[in-house]
Amino acid sequence: MIEKKLCLVISFKKTVDAMAFEEHCLKNNVSGRLIPLPKEISAGCGLAWKCEVSQADEIKKVLAELNIESDKISEIVI
Image (cartoon, rainbow, N blue to C red; front, side):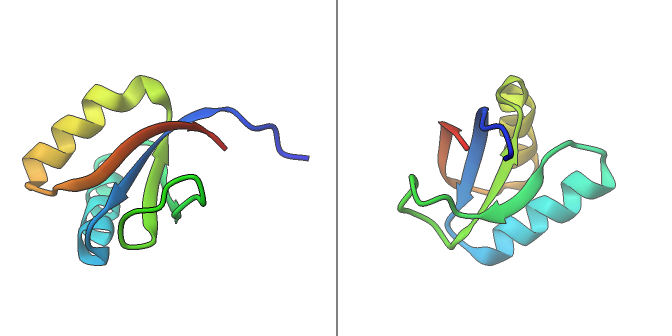
């Protein structure tokens, strides 16, 4: 069984924003991955970025640089 842990999950309003964010992160070695929106979060386009909680400031900076508005930024155990 996979061990659950506290993660930072960023949901997006639009799928195109989620895809652009993922592309940028992959090109710039920002750790994390695109996941289906967890059931604990009932907002957004159905996709979310999952990463370490310690990356919150870095992720917010990337969102601002790309002019992408997140739907919700949550810390949840998944």
